Image 1: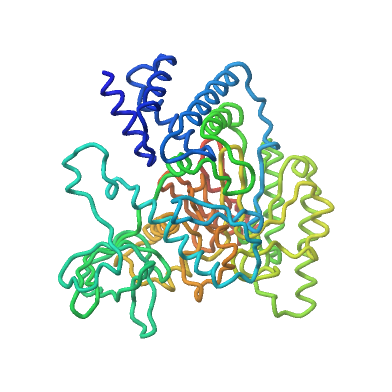
Image 2 (image 1 turned 90 degrees about the vertical axis):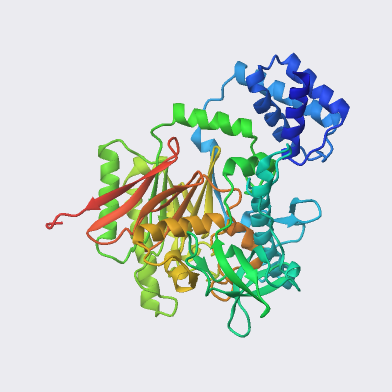
Length: 540
């Protein structure tokens, strides 16, 4: 039994790339004995210990006795506090709106095999180094997820499955090896001759799609990273046999490895705290809701009437949301090059909205209002991430609505253990315009699923080249989707939908336009959204 327990200890810690000496194995066995852990719970208990150990700033690859003992004592203290006292939930204390330009920049370190916080001040212009680093970070984040995937990572125990493992190669390993088959991970891009290539950190290879029956699921656009299997030819091209999206890693897995890193800049929480928060939200806040509206055209005659009808329904049914997110466009036409009259009308529309919100004091006192600009709205910059709406247009909203937030695009909501990413972009159209491969005869429902899969598998909100979608390189990390968020709002002019993929709930609230005004309600306790429709009668 002791040998089995020791093998389990070694196996679990090896999963986190840790090595153990005889003394540390003895300490862990003593911890299991002192805690009276049942045989059935041994592996999960060791995994919790390993996860907490790797969150420590001074954790080393070879497990340190001192750090391990400190982690065990900390876990004991947490358990005792949990039994003695239970925090009284106040949602206000756990609600944070994260600005894209305030998120700390974490870059991938090849030497350490983890993320490092950038000490360099961030700028809006960026540098040549940051442009290269942003693309390499995307590749390295995806690559380390791929290499941890069960189809690529060998087991620490002898197994017949080793023969089925896939080995990832680099473009530099192709040279002189004509007629051999390779699996590569790289970015799809066009070279100077206009030929589609696969680029990785070591070079590039031209792709030949003639032998491919059909690609895997997802949208393969220029700038996406893809897993490509093919045969290297004497013409120095890769005849593609199969192409697919890189496998996505769950939020729980990523958090178990990098839970100690504060990616949002709002304070990191431990996995134990997250699990406690999850239970408390389900038990104590089951009726708490967030509203999400997109394309709130304030210059449309029915928009303000629709918002008024939505507010009336909230009051009548005592259904006051905690957060109301309004995404642009807040105008039906671009006014960036318009005349002064258009600009004045744009401001007047925001003033009218402020008066309307202020007319509902119960909602004004309770709800947080978040405004996210769209592609046609007036902001300081047109590149991603976009700055918030100009303060020139939002003065009355600030004075009349106490809990108003003018957010960047994208922005994030941190609510207890949940992370909700909000992105307003016509992403479906942009991805399809630049697609280089997709399955034939794809229906609308498949396109929605493919878009969600592509965005989450790419771990990025804009997996396109910079000439297609310019991005501020110093702030590219604010578009990153790693670890996966709890929920992702892809506000798009495309039809509304909701899809849960790899544990991440993704939805498009639709357009708040016309006689049937569509929006979504999100329930944190259920991690689910529902489509809501406000219909106007003919008389209205």
